[in-house]
Image 1 (cartoon, rainbow, N blue to C red):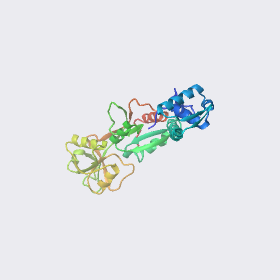
Image 2: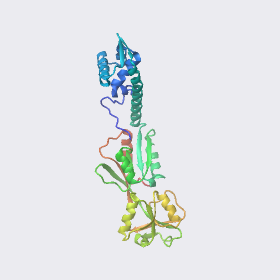
Image 3: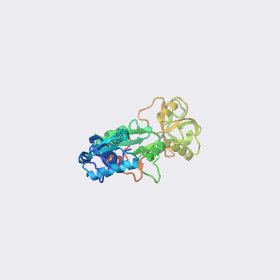
Length: 316
């Protein structure tokens, strides 16, 4: 996950990333400059700091470490064996800081930054590619890190800071999250093509009370919705198979292993019939969620605004 770019203080957007190491780890930067020039005055001029500041910083560094890093020879200095050992690690540390600064600043760039975006498996074939294509018409350089998973797993990654935003169902209601309903997706009862109900176009869910169901595993939002709808229809579903992906369930239905409540497929699936459920009302809400109080980078803010503008038109 990317971090908010700060416009005040040391991490200025206009700052040279080479200088970030000096800002974030000044004593290491001071040490490597003196080691390179072997001269405190020249190093101070190069770093654009007072010589007295540089000398005090080096003295504090040596005091903190409890070793002499430099041997003094009048106005010049040279590294001690301890100093040479410390220099190699200091240069690696400063290089890591520079690379980290480059990465987080690049991810937060309004034009070319990155959005870490999670979504349900059922939205990966058509909905999400269409959303990203439409968004990049006005933001062609924004990059995406995409994660497909079930709802609870995505919310965990959202809380862990791995995701900026996620599309999920049901729409979560938790104090540490902000969620907005975007659209609704009708669910259908999917049966094998040679099933006794296959010729029907509409059905009350109670008519399937004696059927074996194939469902997603517990913890998936669609599984919870299936259980709730069956309970509302007056029965507890008899589960024959559990899976992790909706299209796998359609394949199980086509093989005659049960029936399933599923959202519409991205593409027609042979071997099954898809019936409209008239009672109870079979639908799932799709929403976008993000971490409450978490600052957005410019690309994340732009994509969030775009998603909210698609309320009611998210799904094809």
